[in-house]
Image (cartoon, rainbow, N blue to C red; front, side, top):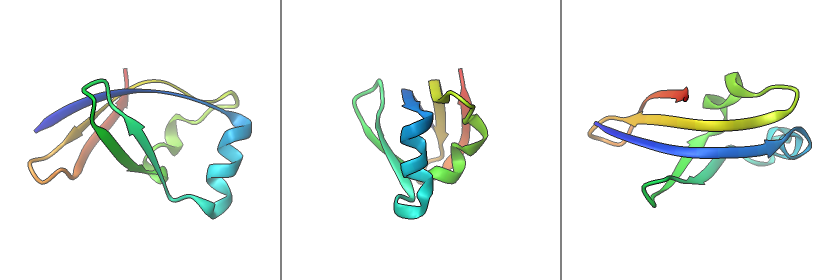
Length: 72
């Protein structure tokens, strides 16, 4: 298993673009220097009126499939 951490700071206005149906995934740079692509539906539960902000940890299995995503 791999644990990767990243930060997001996306305003509510920017999120409207992402959730308008034009984009299906978000690409982030992890603190470990890896580029990670996450389907947007995994991030919906973290969206607030202020947007999508915070530090996150994702756990991937040995096949790089998402196992867990949490705000830390």
